[in-house]
Image 1 (cartoon, rainbow, N blue to C red):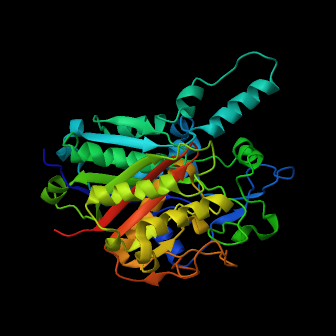
Image 2: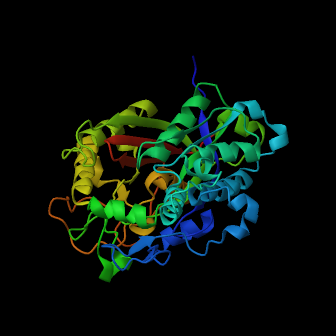
Length: 417
């Protein structure tokens, strides 16, 4: 069976750097930090008082009041990003086969805002169970996929992938697989997350996973830096329209890039820590290269998972050197989380978009907030520090690794007929 080619024909996002693709790319190119102090709840008793939140967002600009009441923030972000991606793709919904069009969406946590609010209201009451009829459908992680399919009438594959921080990379890989096997023509895919509240911040603080640099919050997300102390919480969504190549060409679609390979592995090591030697990360990149039929020397850019955790960054760097050998010193590596923060279940989608835009614009987004070299990280590596760098980019890898040992790598190629 000959596999179908899979291409990207639409992009959309809402994230801490901007509420559309143009604003996002502009933020990346200018090395802007999306971090600020949290104002949506009282942080006075919290160890961490900052996060990378979506800016200037008003749900009433996108939804009527009745509709907004039925959507948790994470689902709202999913709808906003997807609306941009659909418009960008110029899909004529009345001219495509909706039975062969699907939605595979991701969220690492789902409606944690809704869960916290409903439980809080119950605890404040007299014990009478007064819960909203929208409580469950707003909270569950699959409802964004359902809401997207309802809005656009897509009746093909429809489900949610949940693998912590690798969730939306898993969604993109699954979407590409359905198309390559000939089971679908078009799939809306990506992920969304919104967990900047008392439960989300308190939970990650308890794990000692997030930065506590409250006096230096603008520069707290420090991938690969000696002074890193954990990731910075982010929120938002990334949406991609994946399409079968011939289908896209036939309708005259704009093609951003081609999906050419992927890998999925498990560390099988620890609940939250990566394997210290980066075994799972190494294997997943090797699988992506094998899937694409490429030698390591073909890769020009790696959008690293790069969360700024003390152990995680070292493990990923070890994996990169193990996979790429001497070529590791010739390619560009960067962590866009230094600007967006860590979008959890949306990270893979937003970083896949950053990788695709790097190919389209032949420019590597930087790693910002790097203050001091860590002797455990080879100084010969080009971590694209501080400023964007122009270079030829034909192939780019996007890495995402999640709690539980979930690893995903996606390989994109510069589009050629």
